[in-house]
Image 1 (tube, one colour):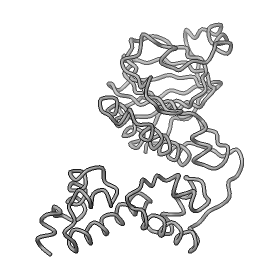
Image 2 (tube, helix red, strand yellow; image 1 turned 180 degrees about the vertical axis):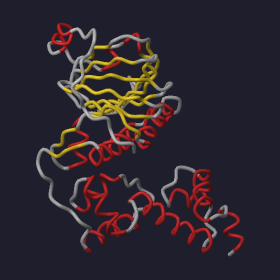
Image 3 (cartoon, one colour; image 1 turned 90 degrees about the horizontal axis):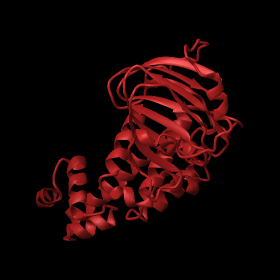
Amino acid sequence: MRSPAAPQNLPIDGFDAARWRALGGMRQEPPWQTLPDHVRRTSAGRPWQGLAVWHQVGPLGDLYVPPHDSHVILLRRGQPTRLLQRHGSQVGQTHLQRGDAVVLPTDTPSFWRSSAARDNIHIDLAPAWLQRAAGCDVALANCFGRSDTALAAFADLLLASLDNGASLSPAFGEHIAMALAIHLVEHYAQPRSAPRAQGSLSMRQMRQVADAVQGSLHERWPVARLAALAGLSPFHFARAFKASFGTTPHAWLQLQRMELAAQLVRGSRMPLEDIARQTGHPSAAHFSHAFRRHWGLAPSAYRRAG
């Protein structure tokens, strides 16, 4: 990731101080309601708790945006632009490239001046997700723009989900919100209270996690559920898990499923649909694709080779 732009003390020509002061008394609303004429698409109506995405398209011109109760992640979608911003008392400017990210903490009024038409993806995330991920109260730092491929990928995924059934699943929103929160805690947040230091999982914690997962590979195992087994926050669990197992929880879980799948494909005549269900895959087609990607052979070819 490219380093973030540092806050600066910059004069802002044409800045309307009276309009800025008025923001503090405005009622907090979802951002797409603050700028209704800029909204091309939104996740409004999806059953997501504390998570929203919307596509902003608008002309040049200064924007004064009141504070609201979500953290804001802005991803540039259009052509590069010079962007002058004020986040609360801090002012910064950057040359924003396609895919670059801006992070605005909750309860912060903001001012925006762009040299090119607005074409951005906004992700709004409730602070409760960060507290849940970190296991303590955390505060986000202002980020006036930097390259962040992970946040850009989240934005693309959320926007694409509006065109398929994934956006109608509450579980989809929960998984994305937690993954976003863990990323923000790791790269953008400062703890208000020092969390308990964690190195790696104890042998007991490793055994608890492995036994639970391997006994129920057909079930969903989001990071939050795994972390609860070890008695840790999702953020600290993800770090401690990688230190202990040498890989991420998601990659380890997929390895366990593929090991079991290989045993069942080669050592039994069980139908692929049943193996898919037993190894946590939603369909035989999804299972076959994952199996081939992992083992280099389709399940049917792997069975014949045995």
